[in-house]
Length: 591
Image (cartoon, rainbow, N blue to C red):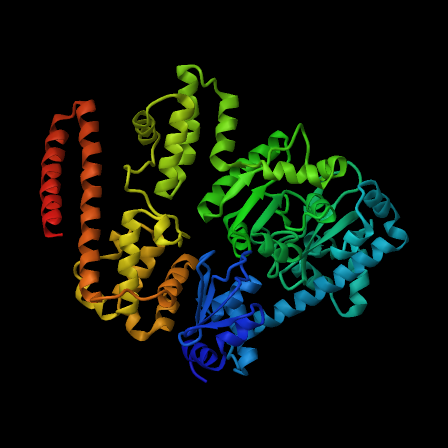
């Protein structure tokens, strides 16, 4: 049929976005658009909008947006290639694959069959005579039979090659099991042995409900306590969350995800009605895992074990949530509890109360720092600022960063400018007012600073008035936008991609935040009046903001040179500051 772009365009022509979305959302006509309750977060008033003419959707509540491919990717947590394959089948479009792609596709299907057969084997073993000890263990841990069945628990019997021998008559050689992570090759060509032996088995499913890997737990005090099958073509541990398939609908309904550490914690949560719980497979959370979770949740509660290891894992996880711009709170469990033990001992209401009292990132880290340092002494205050300062310096949202500084100053009883000065010494802090907007930020303009409002207004004008980018190309540049998503969209617009229509713009964008912004500007009411003049006014204001940043940065540099007694540098910086002042004054007069 042609190249990849031509095939993608053909799929767009044949697939009606209204038909695709209507399978998930009840839509009602609203002017030229259609509206309904958002499938990606819980809401009572419809804020989810579909523009059938342009083929885009956008939610004014949670800010999810994109085209029909993005909708399929979000609802199924699929890659673009997987979404394209699904829509191609729906549209009756044949996708041409290279021999390598065909081989990879065939290999994936073969591995899925191997893992599915292994899952059945493990389940059968749990129910049979070999699984007697594992069943007693589950009774002792009070895991209901209904939960065992729902999560398809199994048992890997002792012995070196039970699984290999069971699957061989079904047409699966040991080498195929090795590729699926289920068998291990012996050295020097000595055959294979089962990767999991004498362990309770937890199948790990993808979002289509297919088993892709397994976790195994010993039934005694052996080590390692938990063992996962290795990463394969089907399974990457750092990109997978246990129980997400079972939890995603409740997560969408509540808008919140509960994140625990291990398999048993997740099972206990679901058994006690906490059906929006997922587990991080016993490892430190990764950015990929949190970004996957963000497709379904608008916020999260982190509930890790109360021991030192759990506290450390929670602290590491918080940094990843900040990078992903997914709001998170930390539930502090009493004593040395873990979620499983607490639920079995105190019940779900106690667990819900603890989650309800969970602390935001800043409060949690401040509480930890205050345990380590005496905030009543000078040295203790310095220690707290140094520890919390690492969190503040990593925060990408300038509004949140400023609020953290204010809260820390109030807590310690010191001046905000003293804390800012220490943050600059720690390293990484930006001059006040020169922060970077979060990568995934797409909130309404009323929630943003004047600088962000100006950027959004200009981007909106460039989207609906593509010619405006032509005459502004020499006056503004993507680097002038402080938001990462803003810069990405600006780069596409100033490169002339808008002239090819919304589809070409969408193809140029990579981040969900930039795609959502484009969708918002396509669907929102276009600016009234003379759009070219409005764009020129926005460009002038943007240049003024940029000059003010330079002035603020030079002021800080001059102060540092004065304190250091660096006369030569002070003279150079002073001259640069005076020149920046003149440009800023000229910009103000021109506005």
